Image (cartoon, rainbow, N blue to C red; front, side):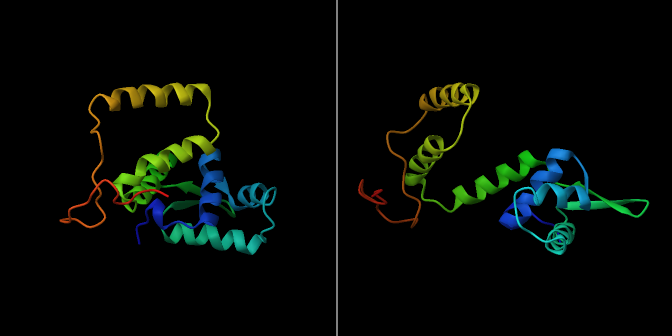
Amino acid sequence: MNTTATEMSTAEWSIMRIVWTLGEATSNQVINAIQLEKDWTESTIKTLLRRLVEKTALSTSKEGRKFIYHPTIAEGDAMKATASDMFNNICDMRKGSVIADLVQTSPLSKADIENLQQLLAEKSKTAPDMVECNCMPGMDHGADCCKID
């Protein structure tokens, strides 16, 4: 079974973030890191590691009696795939408001904000006056279609 990031549970994402941060990790490193934030048992964490290996999100190598876990998908690729999958399920008319809400509620550095401003300024040059609704292809959608409450 080959996995995509969109097939990972929230708990599995927690495990992956540790392995991505460390580059590779033993089960004990993952257990110690997770237990600083979550009240998960060792067996729960090992089950999550096993599932991630089964999904091919992690690979293993053996060093003595220890298994070393290695990510098989880059963190950036996983984030992009998950965001893309989510946005593919949202009406095109609503994507701007969802992005605006994410910007409003997410911690962003000044560099992040400057980058977003540059991207938006460039995107604005070719943006349409209104984005078409794509909820039901082939239908005539007026300006009130998919109106956000």
